[in-house]
Image (cartoon, rainbow, N blue to C red; front, side):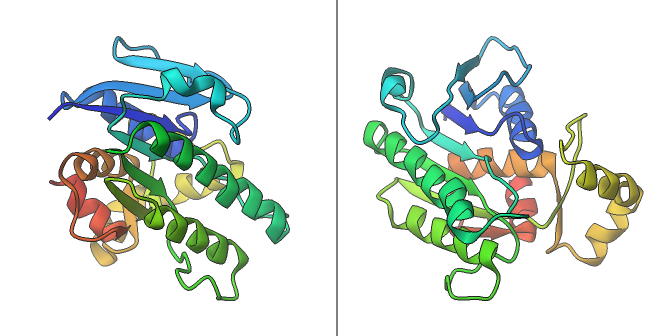
Length: 224
């Protein structure tokens, strides 16, 4: 199978990892990345789309057609935000992209990078988890060919991929040597940027028995 993929958030750690795996995988015929600034990667099968308003895609419609899968890796931290703002930058922003893609690509598989601890009930005490849960539920309710919610826990960056968040960089520096041991002790909590990227491609290509994937599922899906 040959698939055409679009990635949101390719300049972030998860999106950059997904992009590298897409460029390396022969099943991926083309990759479009959409962002406010360049992801800094060039490749014959890569098309970069620079766009500023992530709530309106009207002007981009011709460039958003002919897609088989979307890997939505764009997200913001809830730190310092009230619920209304976080919901606008998480739920509203994600659904704007999803609906624009769905209108042009009814056979699309939509893969959303969420987070471990997301609250599907939308009624828990954690604000970010409620908003993520609301976003997941809305995506699962749209008539895509398929939709999958990825809930990784700790993601070990690989192949030179790095986070832009200084605090996370410090955490990765400390935990990186311990990753092999940590994954063996708790396979349901740990994965890598490579596994997330490979899992996204495999799920888009072959599907998966569940619509919500935690770290253990991501590792299994990455192994095919």
